[in-house]
Amino acid sequence: MAKLSNMSIQGLGVFSSLPPPSDDGKDAVCYLCLEGGESEPLRRDCSCRGTDVGYAHLSCLTTFASSKNKEWDGRDTNDFQNPWRLCSNCLQTYQNELRIDIATEFVSFVRRQYPRDTQMQVEALYNKMMAFALMFDRLQPVQKKEAGVTANVLLLLITRIKNDAPPLQTRYYQFEANAYSLHGDIALDEGTVEVQRWQLLTSRSNCSCMKQLAMLKMPPTQGTI
View 1 (spheres, rainbow, N blue to C red):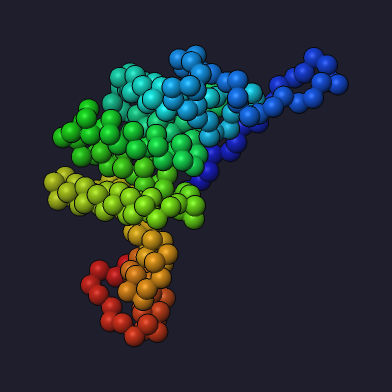
View 2 (spheres, rainbow, N blue to C red):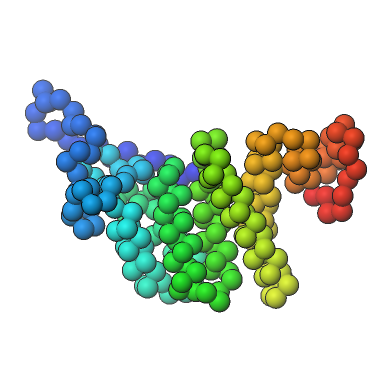
């Protein structure tokens, strides 16, 4: 998946002898509500730089994204997702724990607002799943478990769409492949022969997969990719 390039934001100082400003954000306020971090921590994990640029409360980011969704015209799903994925200041994707947290809020929002819309729920779940996948090596065990549950629900809903409204959109095949890939990463992280077999069954190369299964002395199953 292509990564968005980072935007470099650099301020111009009046006096060249002045030291560069601190980037610790201790005096920052939420750019949405203009309040500090006393009642709720300020978050920033995007490409914003500077002492007071881009900091916000998670609850404010959630409220902002929810309000932007009310303006959605129902056509491009990217327009629906972007308020939950992109910082409105630097227009780059949220990263790390903040990306996971706001993606979780996105899933909750869609379940409340679109309880009967399976496709909208798939879009939100995929966004959350990829937030986990992009920082998989740094996830805590409980987060890896949640990532696996998210992938399972995503696959279940995609199967429902297959049964109810074929043919499946091309993008959903990619969602499905990435869900199986995440399951493979979780399986390899657990390190047992059985879970290694799961990873091999989701390999793109069927020939290579069969050879490696043979090395593990385990029979192939139906549906080998």
